[in-house]
Image (cartoon, rainbow, N blue to C red):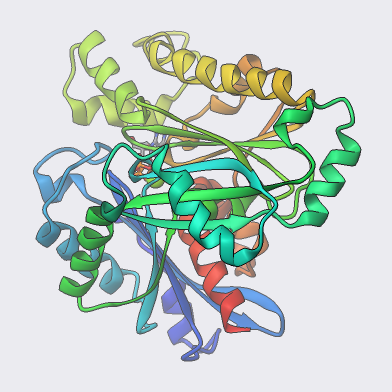
Length: 378
Ligand SMILES: Nc1ncnc2c1ncn2[C@@H]1O[C@H](COP(=O)(O)OP(=O)(O)OP(=O)(O)O)[C@@H](O)[C@H]1O
Ligand SMILES: [Mg+2]
């Protein structure tokens, strides 16, 4: 558990708690992250935050992806809520990107009513399971944005955004995943405000109103998620079946050490070259070179298809905390790379600034969820 000491300041009266507090909960494969915010005079203020590793609930090491039962996940959720001293009665929860399908489709320009019938029919083409087993959501991309894009992209191939069509962002989630999440929340005696696929929460917390195409790479424990966003809208998404735990597994095997020791070495040394001692960098690159070449492929494909440069790349997830990863990403992607710092858009005590900046990439999804809830309260 990364202890949150913010709450102690709160109880000393430094900040005043209100019932308007909002909570974002990100149940990842290796850990649960929670963030509680409150609105004050148009600013989001951080009240508390915390993280709990799931490994120990499955009798495995910290940092590894788990597949826990509903009961065990609920237990961990209760623990992190208690330890972070979350007080708000309800929370917003993320749905893993891997459990969803997100895509941009073009539909004829029809009325909203016709669209309601058309989207599920169209969605069937992309869903390998009966439509009754999934939950559909969609968002019609505002016409202004499409007009603007068409104007700016006069050299863009017409078929990617033809006039007389409506671009619709389609999101599909398997109902089983929603049921499982609902059971965890009920077992933990919490109330759910809403679910959101983590891709949208992460974008809200990192890319803001950035109009230029930008890429977000979320390096989790078992997987890496790659999104390209333009005008705040997801244009491309891709899942790589490798994450930061693969680096640990690699170190453990190559250097013949326990997973626990390998995880420690990964966190302590990262990609920093060492004059002596084990060559962690060489082993880590076996995983990371693959992950970043995938990201580069996604980036080049996008640039080729739309004739636009992806100007900025943001790294998030626990894997982004690795020393030297920004430089490695820059080398692969040949563009400027930064680490997600979602706490920077939230008011925080000055003395915690550095610690929050360092932990920031891990809390991108949880903060994005809380920010949406804050927005809905206004
Ligand atoms: N300082 C660090 N240096 C290197 N790796 C780190 C560091 N801190 C955490 N990690 C790694 O980050 C990974 C966890 O990242 P994160 O918390 O984003 O995953 P998750 O959200 O649980 O997983 P997913 O998003 O895949 O469901 C672990 O594999 C862990 O080893
Ligand atoms: Mg995650």
